[in-house]
Image 1 (cartoon, rainbow, N blue to C red):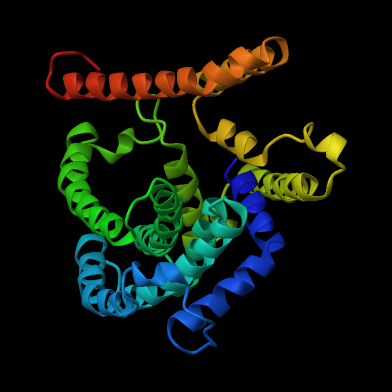
Image 2: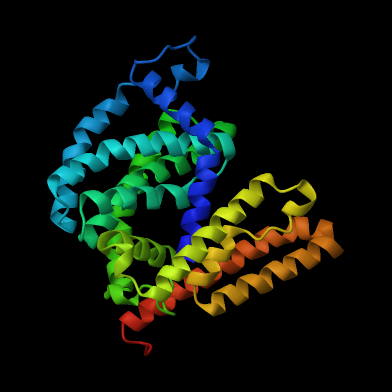
Length: 320
């Protein structure tokens, strides 16, 4: 499952090489190395350009120190992570802007591969260095959709920027303690209680890069080969198959995720998708109006109830 996600993500990313190339030209312009055109009117109300290098210089020591203190990442590896994150951010942002799809499945394994080479045998260092590098880039790209939505609704870019900064501080102050309460033992991740499919994928990739593919069980190595081949094939079919056949090509993302989450989740997703598709065929107007809101409510309700149950278990009200 992890191999399908990695292979399809990197293949799709590679097929978008023009967006990647444009990202580097955009990065050069940002630092004054490229040729600038006429000033766009929006630049008068956007954040000043100097905020970016100033923030980069001010926060790099903080990020590197936290990486070394919390995750025992060598200082030199941390110093590589931050500028690499900037590059990944430009690439991810460009791809998101061009295609409306953030290349999550591609950038994570790419950074994991890099740190698997420069910090061999350090699994926690591999995961967290890659997480910082890929995470910064991917969050930067995801924020573009928020900024665009705010702009379409008449929001001021600088006010949105300040709101995002407040969100970072509030999120760190609330989410980290809440996570430690809900998941006191990391071994819970990947179980029925907390499936965390992305966690399992990241852990599997880091283990392979840290100890080498040769350290894996022979069956796992065969599975990786099959998954890589299938992921590449499905990504190519999604891109190049005739229009009438594209709708019949299974989603590599859906297939990969369904293999790393508990069966109950995959069955529920299949049942929901089947109901939605039947409604779209039989009653398209009804489906257009209700499928997304009802689905969103189901997801949010199940998530909130899951958190409530976990808190009650931690408080000793419910048994595990």
